[in-house]
Image 1 (cartoon, rainbow, N blue to C red):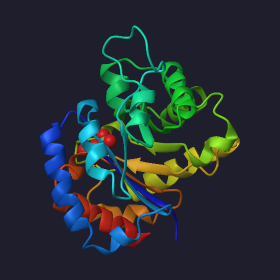
Image 2 (cartoon, helix red, strand yellow):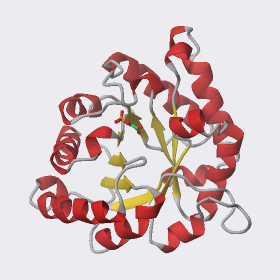
Image 3 (cartoon, rainbow, N blue to C red):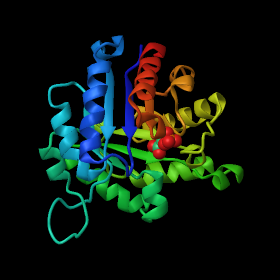
Length: 257
Ligand code: PGA
């Protein structure tokens, strides 16, 4: 049996009120599932709400083993950085994770590997586990550049990350063309790419890092995907927004492991 992380990326959705309502129902229903009893080191569920809903998340989850984190942090914890998010304050709310380098951050906010590397190092220093997202675009895949792109994202983004941190670092592989499109990478593509990422991480002394898959993951495909070697769970967007769909996805991921 492998260790599994199922993470919800809520993006720019759910106000603090909607967040509280979600967790009220979610926790009540989750407690009735066998997967709830399995929560711990081996099976983790993590939520990434928008920044303004972090406090509501923290309060809603305080008596549970469910974890959460910020969707983005800056590489300085305080000062004259208008509009940014502080890792220190995120940690103060009892968060455990920081999502870093999601393809939407790379695409719409022009975040580069070198810039993301600063955030990763700062997250580790602030005792937040970085969940570092990597992935190629359709154009890059079709022109045979997938491995070069992933390697650059790994080598530049994880530069100077100490090997000792491999247990508190998570990598999420999300092919950009599969995010929110309903298109899912084939089992063969996931297998080949996760093996490649694992090899690159091993080369950096980070071979124990869990590698999640993301991009149109649903309850229906979770069971098959979780059985692929070096797939340690999922980063889920759309299917994490409604309680029943996300609970089914969690249940299928845990039972398929
Ligand atoms: P999706 O999003 O599950 O809606 O494809 C995944 C993500 O962006 O992390």
